[in-house]
Image (tube, rainbow, N blue to C red; front, top):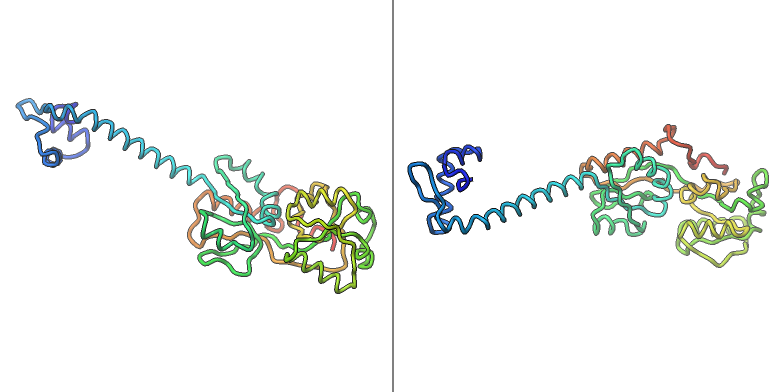
Length: 302
């Protein structure tokens, strides 16, 4: 500004500082380069040849600084509109499959990035990755610095394809009839597999087992749709498929509740965009909430 205006007073005024302050800054710069940058005269100041050589470089540096400041401000603004979420299979199917479409429509300015999370490695997930919220089943141990907020009760359900004889049969089948059916097993070590084996021991079943195991919901639906198979799964996982008429929940004479679905949240204050998503999901799955038609664990026969 001093080179453009040629007067210390006017340059100081344009920068919003005092004239003595501008004079002091100029003296500091000249001491830094160990050479005079401006010649003083009665009408003001004029840049020296050295100053004229430095001016293009100074303008480039200032332009880069301005660009950097703009980039930082833009990034901070973007971060305020970004939600970095992780979800287990149950969290994605049970909580987000129903609520996220409505959220994205109501809040198009917020970008939600959802990545997969393994329930057995939730602590490692929140420590290793920059995550704002995790949608999952209530863990046995909550990671340090996080808290769990429950959203939706869940239970195990016997599920089949819509063309299965039990999908068209009235009433509740007796345990012997279920034991004579062919079953699609769950993964070894899963809670669903343990509960199914408990049922087999309790009722003396020796069921026919289809030798295919998968955690992929789409493959489970494909298998159930193609053949007369039953499977025992968390209702939340197949809820979106049942709601769309692609799978059928078979009524059973027993109840097998399981841990609720909800959100892992940091104990620190939430960013506005994260809080907006958390409030939306919590409200969507709140009992009696006025949301689009959806199914909960209480809507299906046991």
